[in-house]
Every structure is written in structure tokens, then in C-alpha cells.
Length: 306
Picture 1 (tube, rainbow, N blue to C red):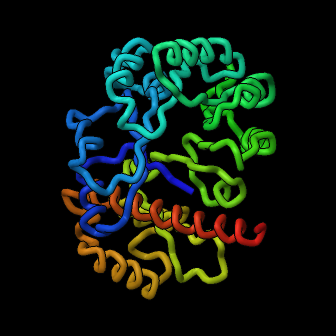
Picture 2 (picture 1 turned 90 degrees about the vertical axis):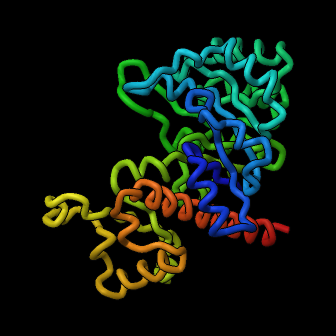
């Protein structure tokens, strides 16, 4: 099972290679958020990338509160991929309507891309009607489960019930399924996805916390801990959060300190001028660990079935 890390910066990727020289990493890049040094992701300069996936970036364009995403158009996306498609193992359709009624528009974009010599994977938004059946009947070998928007409602409306229904219909032994924008232990251990992605490792850092896989939690399958940092004075008085500096008492703090010390940095790196980098690094390491844990669980299931 693969977890594609999105919003992964080149410095973090290189730092991961320094820490884990034999570890290959799955990376999701976005047409909306390409780096000035984008070529480094695919020209062989960075050697610890296992697989590259490419996304149209439309979701970012539609939801971003700031930034210039005028280059994110269907024509520009097609032109880019016509030159660079061989660098990416998988790349998505230019799906621009995230509602259950967007199938016609998204399918037209898909067909236009295919007519241009491209082979994008479709992204599902209409979970219960004809869209999924169309993809299965037309022998698509890779399908992504995308977000769902309902007119008049704010935010993401995709629920686990949508995912559950789709996975009950998809023959996962023949069709690879990617879960966009989610990577929780609960979902990954329950459904046999081929892959998923999440920018959570970067978003968590933005909001001042990291995810930490605590192997010492013997009585829990999901050993995820969400830990904030005491960045502001008011954090000393909050009781609704678990903090890196105090959670688990002295033994918990000492174990976390030993963990990061073994990685070659200290608590002061997590709080200092490069805290953004080191917190992002910890979140990325969490998802690499989660990838290993989920893969091992599904391999165990496969051996039992066999």
C-alpha cells in the first residue's frame, strides 16, 4: 500500500534521504503548486523517489484563498503532460466539477486528454449513480476516489459511506484504487486501497502539531498521537490538547526526545528558526511509518486468504 506525500519540499525530501538512504518515497506533485526546481523531482537529481503521481491542481485553484493559479487550465495541463508524462507513473484527469452532477463535464475533459495522446486516471465524484459504473464498464485500471461537493453546503461532503459503497463495487484485485486527500489509519486498515495521499504532514505543521506513531502503545492498534507544541503563552493553559512538552509524563517526553535525538536533532530544532522544516520532517516520517504498518497488515490478510 502506498501513501503519496503531497506538498513535499525538496529540503525535506533530501533530509529524509539522509536519514533513510535506502527508503524510497512516493510523491504527489500538483500542476497548481509546481516548484521552480520541479525538474529535480524527475531528472534523477533526487534518488529516493519510488513513484511520482501528478494531479491537475484544480482543487487547489478552486479552494485557495490566495495565490495565482491562472496557469491551471485544461489546455495548459495537456501541453505540460504531452512533454512530461513519462516522468509520472500516474496522472489524474482534469476534473473541474466536484459535485455529483459533474460527470459529463469531467468525462469530456477526460476524453479530450485521451484524444491528445494521454492516459489520465479518472477521479470519482458521483458515488452512487452512473459515473463509477461507466469507469468499471470501460475497463479503467486505475480509479481515484475524489471529494464531493453539494451545492449550498460548505466544505467537503464525502463521507465514509461514499467510500464504503465505492469499494464494495470496485474489483480491487483488478482495479487500482487511490483515495484522494485522506490517510487515516481507520480508513486505510479497513479498505484495500492501492494508494492514498495526504498533505496532512504539511498542513499539521502549519497548524502547530505533529503526528507521532508511538510504538509503546501496546494495547492500541492505532498508535497515532497528535501532539501540539507550546508556541504561545496561552498554550500553557489549554487542557483540550496534548502537548509534546508534557504528554505522557516524564517517560513519554523522554521517549520522544530519544526518538528525535536518534534522528540527529533536538527539541530546540522543533522550536527554533527552522521549526517549520523539522516539524514537517516529523510528520513525513509518521506517514512513512504508517505506510509500512498498513502494508504489513494487508500482506498478512493476503497470506491468510492464500
